[in-house]
Image (tube, rainbow, N blue to C red; front, side, top):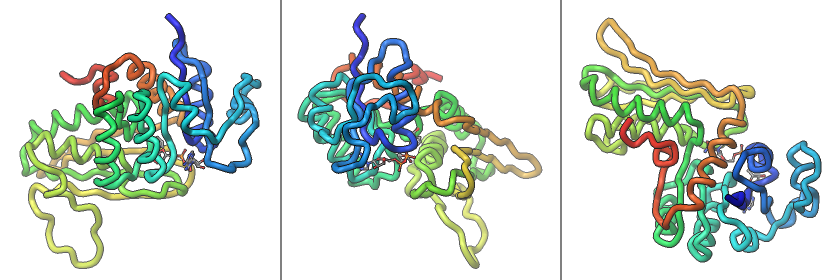
Length: 271
Ligand code: NAD
């Protein structure tokens, strides 16, 4: 079988460099394009060098349309506004699209999801295997423990992260709400400050910590009377996200147009 040609959007970013490495090193994938913002200083340099590897003979480019034409699958870890534009290009070429960028608002997500009518699109706010197992466990546990168990989602990330709560924390909150047959928007308590009054039964609370170089830690806490259950995931390296995204891109490249999740990629549907 020939290698799946993969393009990386946001190639000069923290995740972009890890993705270049993973696309080069993963069996079954080949790096075909590494794209940065228009006018970025890395344009013209070798993609391997940009990622701290030996040169691979692929020049970093700012031609996004060409990447969609050349590649079987494109991975996006950029910014919400850029991701919406990129999803539109995926729909035009029918190229498989893995959205790793987080922080998209409802309108932006809807725009990305529309592209799924014309291309395979994976919306993947967290591409790690462990977190996707955590999502499945959260959905299950929330259906078992009744509303007298208060659910709180706690997360910590590095000081550079710009959105809060993290995309993963919100996905965990959604999984917990689904487990209880609820819509997260109706029961989310995203911030608390000052005289908040007592906790409303059934709410799902969020707490956000930012600092240092922490890659990502999430806890889903079930606080009952006199006992507590905690599901915890901690990231040791960004490589897990890059490897998961490349795995998703390989998977998506042979799927029909449609909207998919990491649970589909990892076969966690019946977990
Ligand atoms: P970063 O700021 O280091 O990198 C983003 C890169 O995108 C920058 O190099 C920027 O120049 C580039 N960019 C912006 N607009 C662009 C455009 N129009 N075309 C091409 N490139 C463009 O950020 P990061 O830490 O790499 O994270 C990027 C995104 O990925 C964030 O939304 C983050 O939350 C998300 N993320 C997701 C996961 C996951 O598992 N899905 C894991 C880690 C980070």
